[in-house]
Length: 66
Image 1: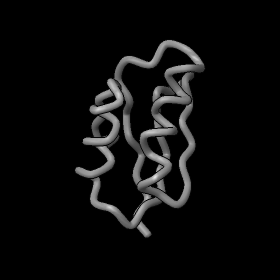
Image 2 (image 1 turned 60 degrees about the horizontal axis):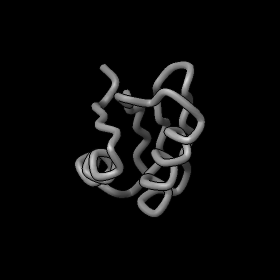
Image 3 (image 1 turned 180 degrees about the vertical axis):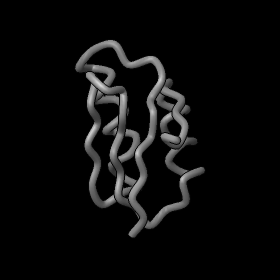
């Protein structure tokens, strides 16, 4: 299982957090999205590109935290 820290763009409220979590949950084993840091911590067997695509389709683009 891979662990990713993804910087999320565009989150402003709890509803945004829920949308990002809903986009990632079907693709991962564990998801934690933090509005304060704008980070999604994800454990998944899926490639990073699959996770980023799901987030973008939900309206919240992201990138791997450097």
